[in-house]
Image 1 (cartoon, helix red, strand yellow):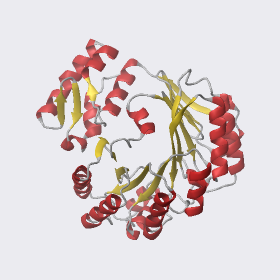
Image 2 (tube, rainbow, N blue to C red):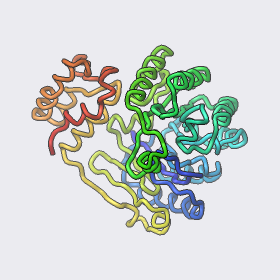
Image 3 (spheres, helix red, strand yellow):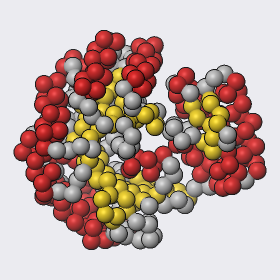
Image 4 (cartoon, rainbow, N blue to C red):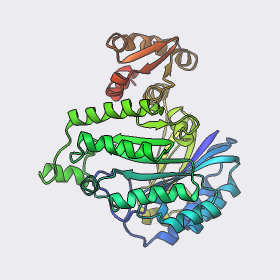
Length: 376
């Protein structure tokens, strides 16, 4: 079981908070489609005999590609890899790119069966702060069109902690999500990444900074309201009705294998991690031997730390038996010793050999994980 990720870096404009590799130019669009097809063909042995169970178009804004271009890429994948029937195939999209005609074409003529829509907020002042292209009217219309054409497996993104987002507006954002009866939500706290436009604007005092206390209030409301409406918080930032968990992202969280195509895309096959060159021109002009920017073979300690970091974020948690069976006595003893203070403080819940974060602990997930790390 393995996944394929395709990084489509095109964007109409860069959001203020974004630190992913993107480009606002479509100059290399045709060359990019050719290049990613060639990369798919050249790296067919990376995942060994693993069957493909998920395909994910991320970005950037993959919905800037036509349905025909998306299908070209998918046909190449199906020609190279053993893809399971009824695999989850997700397309990330923005409300300004997918009108009714595009959605109807996608539904009728493509195997893509799951959509991820970057709504972020249903209020215009929040969208302006984030430097999004769409407005609130377009966000709502996009969801309505998506449901109308028959996409049932749908997720949207909502961001909390935006300085313009009041508690009442955040509650209204969630209410709209529930009213649309969307089966999956990805919701993230706004983070100011270094060297992003948002970072610069805040340092120049042109934009208000994030209020951490407000973000915590929003997070607590998110946990309370999703639970009340029967959504499972199966990963810190992800909430779903039963049967609608993201199968692709679950591969990352559960330590599965995946291959990434496109500029800046990452890959992992259980032994090594590698990532592609982060430049559109270089990517399109490279042969297969020059696509990989860097590669690292993971040590046992790095594998252990990654297991802690990813599994602790999920409702499945860290399993002490798994740590003992895979990594041995030293690691299991270290884990058991270092996690005790978090159990005593109410941030970790222990059930048998499995340890999960409580709602209070979710606010400190990264710090708890780093304390549990094994020094390399």
